[in-house]
Image (cartoon, rainbow, N blue to C red; front, top):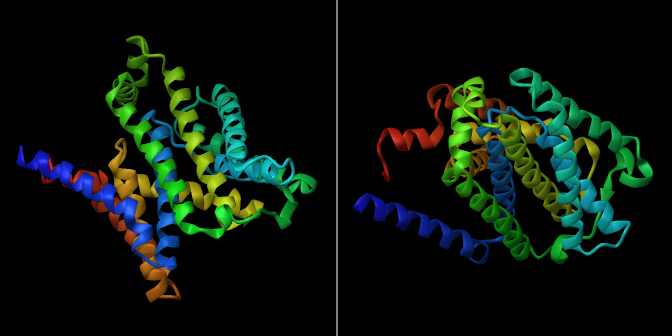
Length: 306
């Protein structure tokens, strides 16, 4: 009972800290917190796909699709911000379902390659439509909320909160049992009546939606993007690494992984300006080797907060 109470106290403290953080810190840390929350959304969205045994690199594509759709509708069609976000999400759902029906019967490395090809195709499309996307020069939009980072923080925190609610639902609904069966043995799960394609499509679409929202937020927050940035493979890789290091198939793991890795990365970038990425990479390799179940696995091993 005491451990259970401690768990709720820590969760409550984390929620309160997240809510008041932008009001008790300066612009630099506020900016860092915004980017960290954005990557937490991406890491959690990647985990949505991983729960259905999907190693997806389509996150990069959906991130860029959300960024460009929102920017183009806002700038060229004069849509209000909320409508630009909505259009981006609706288009992402359509694309995710179409892509899912074409690729979700694949598995393992074959699906990973197909999802990577999808992101690369969108990159080429963005480069070849200069009248719409600005081509290699990219696209610029007015700053989000007039550059008021407190409001920007509130928006990305709200998106993360929505992702957390969805994750908790997946953990406590029939999806959890279906995903567990699929990860154990997809063929046996199918024989037992689990519609593996439908469940994979659901998790893949949810994953795409939150990647899209992160991309839409990113372009309006930074005010500009280019195809090589919006469809950068590093976005998908970073999402995967954060989810894996934090702990897969959980709500806390990907969020914790994003927070820890962004703090480490920023600290090393400031203290070791040259070559810090090499040390950062070595730390990631060590973390994956010695923490195969992530940070969440460590606390489970110690029976902490349980």
